[in-house]
Length: 495
Image (tube, one colour):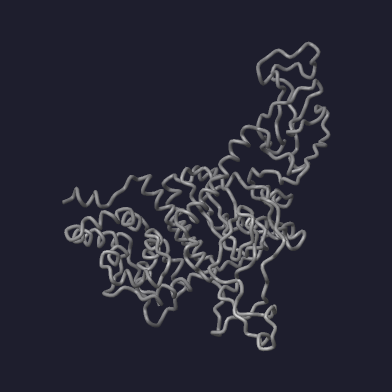
């Protein structure tokens, strides 16, 4: 069962009292931990109680220090420690770290308590046997892909089938990381939204991207067959793997194969802090277009009070089913065309002579129309170039006698990829698409600044936990910068 949940204000009061003592005994060390202290002081875990309470039985021995363990894991990543075993031992011996975490007992939790909490957070079926399930050995692929090329979908038409299920509300919902996603949403993202750090939550732009996440496990596994005794050393018999969920995937950035998973990230692209709002762990050989279908459904369920308006992604999501799904969710697509796409502009319209190589409609006088935004349900609006510039049209131009100039509308449903609501050649599209790099900078924060791959994690649970706590730290960094907050300054002024 879950022990009484300490309110955040009680944690803050206790922390202030204990820091007053530590400041008198070891001021320089407390000052060196100023940023870490501020983070935990601001991190309110009260909203997590309804999420984690169903994970515990109503009877039995009470679970203690659950909030303290969560703060401890956030602090662990802030101080760049990646071994829970070493960290638990360090906190046990360090009274200052013990008090910062806010443990409400005499002794710090053991290593087992940390892992017990994380296992409860991971909603995958529990193994009944101590022996891991054997898995077929897959050698490292030899064929290399081209630069910036991604692994294709294993089954043709899979995105279309998933989109149809998503529109019908029948998409499967199995997420081992569901509790950790709720933790990130309720305790961190919601607060960032209230602070205004995500951007306009009534018209939010989000960027999607997947990134290779290397496993700390060996891809060779452990042989359990008798082939070696028979003189066969190159067998492909089923083996035991410390990370049975890891797969071979193609790292298009480094242009090499990797063994691990893909960390799929969704960020608020208008945020100057590149804040992640949704993370998901998938197999390394899964195409990003498949994960996108699930991610779109999940963010709408996780954030019912946010209106998602703009979808930003690279060419991996450039397929007709994805555009149909975005239209179902009433989102505007800002997706670059796949590099292999040959655009064919064959739209028949009485006011259009042809299209140029950028997709702009050309009037019968040979002048490109000027884009004038999107008018639903009419389509993409274009005006006469001369009327837009406020100039007198040539004498031989008789397309319209109106001072407003001739207006045409192009229906986006004619070809949803080519004729997007915001045309790709327009300045509005280019300016908005530039913000897609926020998801890349967010990945950089997790993989470089917080070095989550330095943890030799041999399971999807531990890799995703590291990613989640790094995302929490990214939000806490933004809070401190936004509020210009320092608890130690407040305590010093009080004394």
